[in-house]
Each structure stands twice: as structure tokens, then as C-alpha cells.
Length: 82
Image (cartoon, rainbow, N blue to C red; front, side):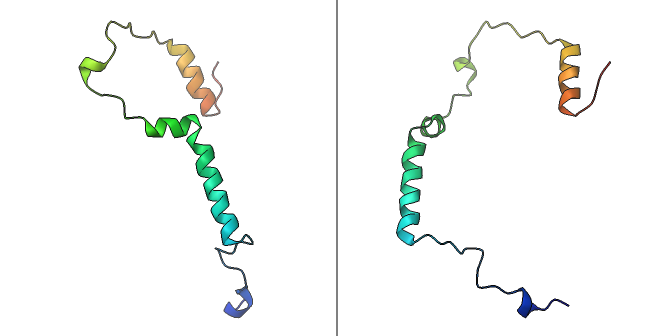
């Protein structure tokens, strides 16, 4: 039979063998690396406009091949289509 005493451990969910200085250095290195990624740059740019006037005009709609779309959906669901 398990008791609370037998389930306790010296480790906690937040137990980390690194020192506070090492954790701070890791955070600073991560921050520096993220600043140069495309995700980091994208996060710093303003959001794109949703105004109608700012959207590209005169673009033709893409044709959708229904059979190809059905095959892609079936494939994503793990189904086979004949």
C-alpha cells in the first residue's frame, strides 16, 4: 500500500541542478538568439493591415481541384480513397 510518506521525494517539480547564475546566462543567450530569428523579427513588426484598401487588388482566385483536395484531406485523416 502506498502512503504519502513513501511517495515524497527530496526533488520538487522545480528542482534544477543549475545555479541561478547559469539559469540567467541561459535566458540571456536565448533572448539574444531569438532576436535574430525570423520569428523574433516578425514579432517586432507591426501587424498587417486588415483594411480593404490595403489588400492587393485584381488577383485571380485560385482554382481548387476537388479531387486533389479530397485526397489531401483523406491522407491527413489516414484514410485511403479509390
